Length: 557
Image 1 (cartoon, rainbow, N blue to C red):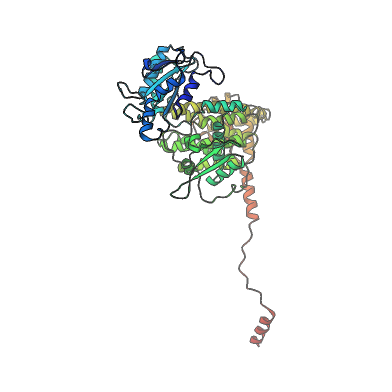
Image 2 (image 1 turned 45 degrees about the horizontal axis):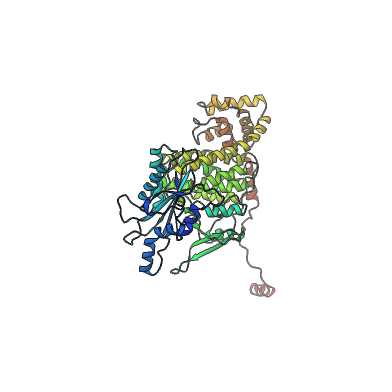
């Protein structure tokens, strides 16, 4: 059961919508199922003599009195809360919806039980699966109701109603979810032929840009380069920027950063984006694959952080992992890219919770993720090794959130895991098949079998029985050619994280080894760098002029 609280200032306009045909003639049999006073609330849906104006005047009675006292209308005096059952839920009768409405207005402070001076309200049903609660927020004593955290309180009451009514139990919120698009926003997107609303599109663009840039100034610049309208807000006290709003290209509707998502507010962005001068691009590295390796290592490190007792540090790493997914989707083109993009979008909900993130502790992962945004595309195993590490971290994130009661975040992380898993399967299968075709001769494979039994005796039988074992032999042969000792390498990569829970341990080891650098290539680059370093010479005396030499000869005579 999903409540969605909003406010406005046009009682009559909302009544017109609730009792009207709907934007697509979807409203059927609109009528009032509950009210502050059923006898005193004209029902245009059931009484042919009742009008929208009569109902609006009854609801606005106290608002009008307060307006005459103050000389101006109370702001945002219309409180609106649709309440919808989940798909597949059973049919609720009018009497049951009436109970839902009374409990919601009581829980949110609109009309507490036994309060004779409470606000006036009605609940209108015009579909099988939901009602709309409309209230005017001026009490009989002229005061405004106490509706702080009304959305959270409505959700909390709906969780109780679900249990009592035998409805589908939805995930509890924690006030960190982004705002959902309004009906008007969805209708506008539909008219324009857009699959998502402007709010949703701007949110995803903002997340993707924030993941890649290195300063708050670059954040605004890149958004502008994409055609997005940016309006910084300057503080009247300090004269400095303290907020911003965005609008889609050519649109006139602006959205503040915090209205897109809590962690897209200016303050939250500046916590993880520096404002000082930084290079426009990462400095070039000797090996173009280094950015991928550093990111893979940092993702594996983040996995171990989730096992620690420091929730703030863990939350910081999950936020940085969100950036990693956005940049991974950008840097790894191919048929699996759509799943990577879907994973990044899903994980946006899992990257924040009520736990305040320690962003500094996750600086290594965040910087690696930003380097990845500018890294060259690395086809084949190295990119898949990073996706594989991301799969395991997403699953760990779902478990971490679930253990702390973060239901929505756990569900989002699980959804990201499924997308990452699909991406991994699409990308890994052809590479593993190619490695299998290139397997070394039987004598070499037998030697590697013995090496595995020596290096990882506890897991040797499972590794050798894994269908990916032939592919691992190819990877071991390549690593040996690159300068690694197979036994030492296996011992090292197996010790990074337990293999007990790995369904395919040979496949896991394959990607861990793939992420190792080529030692011989590294040595060659080191020698090349040394040979091109200029030799430091002892300082020479400055050349003398002709007159100086003549004078010197005269002194010697």
